[in-house]
Amino acid sequence: MLQTSTPAVRFVRLPPPALEALLAGDLPAARTVCGVQLSDWFLSDDVTWLWRMRLDQIALDPRAADWIVRAAVSVPDEVVVGAAGFHGPPDDDGMVEIGYSTDPDHRRRGHARAMVAELLRWAAAEPAVVTVRASISPENHASLATIAGFGFAHVGEQWDDEDGRELLYERPAR
Image (tube, rainbow, N blue to C red):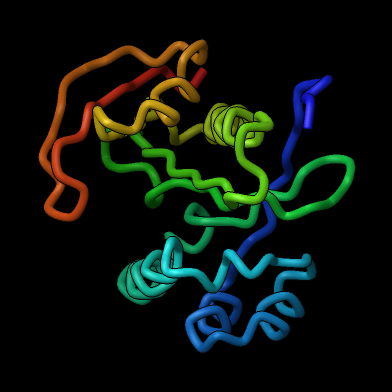
């Protein structure tokens, strides 16, 4: 499909009952809770680990529910194209880290860039956010290309026990 215009997305919360339904494999219940047509991808091994991690995170810090993963819905056609959000609320220095993933059925159409743009808009609107971070595997060329052009600067690297070596990129929230 030839992309003729820059896509846009809106975010729809995935509250704990939706995450619990997804973990139980109950896509119809998750759709009802969210009010959008989540795709089968939301039940795939690609993302189910994330639902458990985010539920555990909310249990430890209920404030996280306002910041973490949401369904990404394309505008104006209202198709769920992936998931995005922050890894949690701003830390003590005002830093948030973005995370995003595109449903394989909707890749290579600009939706990941649209998710990053919307995450940055969200961060800029939050007074507590000073810095936005992205941590990306050096082998993840698609994600590195996705953040290009958004003003991120390479600031270092870290070791993640689950993901291995990650390059760190940051930019001001505003």
